[in-house]
Image (cartoon, rainbow, N blue to C red; front, side, top):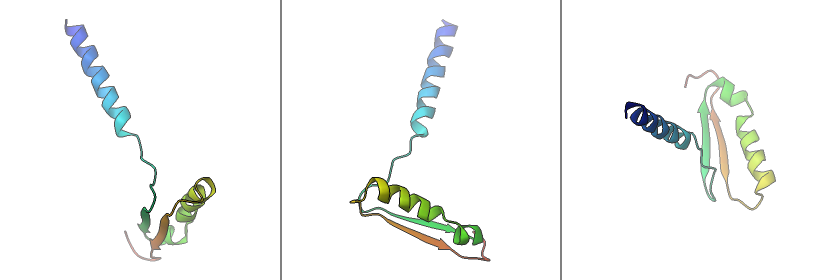
Length: 74
């Protein structure tokens, strides 16, 4: 009986962790802003995300902005 309860708790815990790690993709009309310091400002993170969506979903209206400020702290 104890083994069955432990197994059930383990299954429930694992199922919650699997659901918690799913990331929903951007939807039509979404806006994403990358905030940060000089690494964000000089990096190309925003352009990689934008390029991914524009090459796979060219009709999607998605706004991606880089709001990194060099020399600032996030």
